[in-house]
Each structure stands twice: as structure tokens, then as C-alpha cells.
Length: 355
Image 1 (cartoon, rainbow, N blue to C red):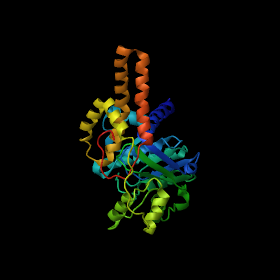
Image 2 (cartoon, rainbow, N blue to C red):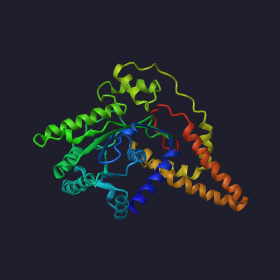
Image 3 (cartoon, helix red, strand yellow):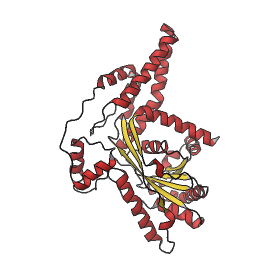
Image 4 (cartoon, helix red, strand yellow):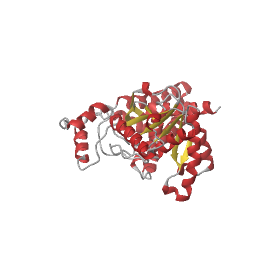
């Protein structure tokens, strides 16, 4: 029953992302082991939309470690637990809470023992910068701890790189790159645990820098990013953009493409005026830029179908269900057309409205 519930929710989310995204480009899916214990180590540029995009493109059922603050309310805690989410406590949650992590780690060890998978964001926090930040050692504690408890266990780490064309912009365009599986067993030396941690972190970090667009976070970062934005590069073409960065051979500045479907966007806004106005108000309360996509996706996923359903019912009262049904299908079709065919430039401004 739990597996059925999990897959139902994943299907609902995947359907929502299909309408929300311009394109989700998946590369290296064949690198995902079909069985056995796997830890997916993912970079974290864009809030809670990251795990949604990652998990809907991983065919295996996964467990997830998320920040403990999400589990404060009992009902929410039950719902999250039913979807394989587990809390991880950080120092900001209070030093007294850190001891609870050991119980969570034990659960992770047993997950690997069962040959299941775990998803974690080893950077420890989200950040829109196009750089792979230093990785925390938490994920190494989990995989090495599992080997301590179950010495005969084999565990793989699969790095996953997420790169957005323009995070916080609708429709989203993102690449999901799966790296080469890393055998944890080959790195773990119980005689030299600190060296094992450093070497595994370095291997994962090096792969992530190739699997996502990575600009060194130094004095040249802003200049390099500006040149790439001005050149209107396709950031989801990760290999090509990383070669530009490495060689310094970035194309000349070019004008942004004209979005010929913009009139269609205004038609959608007019047809969805109430949820759009509500979102304009709600979005102003989103303090962190990395959560714009997260909250907009969740808001649109709930409010737009409800609003279109309500309008369909009202139309049926005046014109009958045949006309009302046609209206509903056209409303959905317009959003699909705009999402899939509108231009996604490398703009830096943040859009708090539908687009």
C-alpha cells in the first residue's frame, strides 16, 4: 500500500512538472544501478523543486533526507514519512537535537542493507550560484557507517548534477545528469577514516563539477557568468558550457530571442486572473529566491486545476457541459503550448508572477 501511495504521488508530481517545464533533459540514466544499495548525491541550486525533479526522473523508489524543520507539525510529519522522507538535524536546529541524527543514520544503514536507495544533497543548503560548493561529510558518515555495521554490503554513490537555464523562471528548463557510479567500498579504509572521507568527497565533487555547469567561486565568477548570460548560452548543454568556461572561449554577446508566444501568456493570465493575483500577493512573502520555483509550482499545481474546474462548472450552467468541456481542454492546452514552446532566455530578473 505504501509503495502504491508513493508512486501515485510521484506520478502526480511528474505530471505537474510536465506542464510546468519547458524541458527536462535527462542524461546518463543508464548509469543508475538497477538493484543494490545506492546513494544519490545531488547538487542543490533551487530549493525543494530539486528533489521533485530528481526523484521523478529516477525509476527506483528512493528515501530522502530533508531538514528537520519540515517535520514540526504532526500531520505533515506523517505525510512526509509516508513518502519516504526522513528528518536530518543541523546545528541551527539546536545542539541538543543533533543526537537524534544517530537514529536516522541507523535507518539509513538498514535502507542500504535492504538494497534500497537514498537521496541526499551534500552541499548542505541551496544556492542559485552556478558553482559546486564544498560538500559536507554527512553523506560519507552514512555510507561508511553502513559498511561498519554491515561489512559485506556493497554501496554505490551516483552523483547527480542539476543545471537550470534560469532558476526561478517559468517555464523551467533543466538538465539532470547522472554520473558514473562510485564504489564506496573501494574508498573506505577503516584504518584511515579521515583520508577515506576526503577522497570520497573529492571524487563526488569532481564529478558534480562536470555534471552541472560549474564556475569557480573566485574573483572572476561574476565576469564569467555575465559573459555566459550575455551570450545567451544554453546552460542545459552542460558539457559545452563547461568547455567554454575551461577554455575561456565564450561566444560574443547576442540579443535575447523574442518570445513570440508572449501574447498567449497574457491570454492565460486573463483566463486565470484570480490565482494569478493571489500568487502575486503570496510570492512577495517568499524570502529566499531559491524557493520561488518551489512555491509557484506547488501553488499552480493546486490552484489552477481547481480554478479551471470551477470556471468549467460555471460555464456549464449557461452553455452546457459540451461547451464547458471544450473550454477546460483549451485552457489546459494553452498552458501546455506556452510551457513547451516559449523561449527561455538567460535572464537575470526574477519573475514573481505566473511567468
